[in-house]
Image (cartoon, rainbow, N blue to C red; front, side):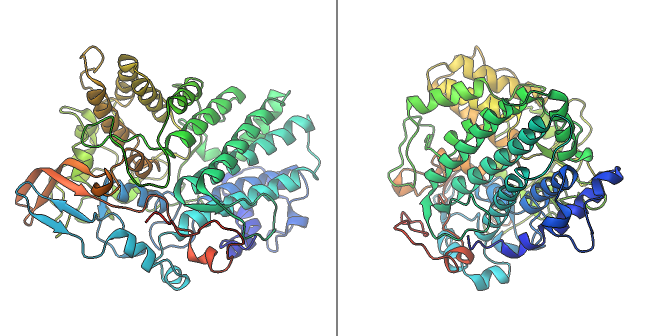
Length: 562
């Protein structure tokens, strides 16, 4: 398949060997051929070589973008776009269009003044979706596609090699552990592509060329297939000790702390259920616009959640990640890690005084906290004001490592190994899916209980909502607020604003209401601003793919709904 990550994959073996050198103290694990001239045949010919390849292929090819345009990983740029378009953060740097991609079409201030964006997001995205713009670091559509197809391709290679190498110990259990690893990350890659792009490619054979684009829902179906295949394969493992041995080598040692320890087989299956629930939730509409649970969106690239969808989410999340389960995480190290402590995550790039940070915490994000929330006390201050002549003026700075309030969640750090990135699902995400599904199915008190549980888990210290007799609208208000603040910098924010209808044109039933915004050079605090984001809901295929690999079918590579 003529994918845009070809050059990156040429270096995948070398990157793998380098990574293994940084996380292993066992000489045998590194003895996989000539590290100065790595090839698949010479270096990935036994179990140790395959484990090194599978580890580096995931953590380097999948999540180290290698471009150096903004930050230095998947968690700083693609996830940065998510936070920008959800209006959780703003930015003024010109890198990769981060200063333009989150700017709404227009805003109506408290006094009725309308501020109009002369360069709307959709026109900017399409103007810079070219191979030349990619080369200049100005094509935001490029990066998530790049990383996820690189991840998918290396998993194809892992599966190919697993069929040929000799494994130690219980060979069948070790081989199935390796297959489950590849199936899980293929499910992840397809889920990321299908949740972000209007169309994509099914790429299940190494090096096969195809222009057979399919719509995003078909990509999500493929993601579900691989998640289910991972679960089925885990069920075939008969030797738990061999499973733990292989997983203990696949997950770098420096990551195996906090929530990132090696999951048991049952824990991994629960992680899979959480991701299956996510695939449904983030790719359907559940409009909640202007406090109306019955809102509808007239024009979009997807369909609305049904009662059957909500019941599926409820069933999957009920069997999803539990408090205390190990999940898939990443951390930084002082050297040779997949990302740097200061530039590899949205959290790191936001953790600084607002006049100096790359990302600036939005006033709209801060209004999602309830009064007295200890997460505010522990993570933010108002010592400086960042002034912007459009929408990103903010009183708030995010404090690296927090302010020392005991037992309260810390949002970000620039210290080596301090910040834990949730690569996939988390307890909080799963609990909030249970909350929303219950609310939408009429079980409001049960749903509110899960919101309260997440707030307690992160040390919010706010009064519980159970027993306060909230209506569905009131309950969903608490739910939307909590998802914004509890899941900050976890790659979900844009998907949430999309499915709630907030990113769509007001003319089609979307928009965001009752927003806080500071104007007039920081002197006027507006508290009831109407925002019309009018963003592209599913991105076009990057030109680096669509130009080099033209479609051979009838599926559009440019979102026809916008």
